Length: 80
Image (tube, rainbow, N blue to C red; front, side, top):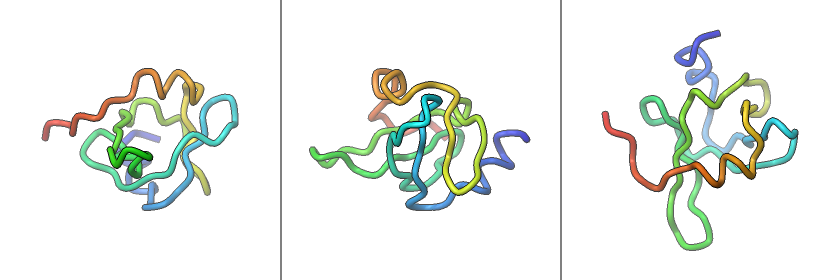
């Protein structure tokens, strides 16, 4: 399944799970080729690329572990 098809299956407030099967974050929405994550404790959104999505069922499953994703996510909005 390509990223466009997966993006259409990703819904607001879905849980995101790392490749280590541990909860990672909650989806705010999809913006272009990135997933916008709900605000953190400091009130900032983070973004992860759709290329990190392995598959979507009742959760969004990443192909990277959550701790790695947290080290590499960005707070900058993706360019359109």
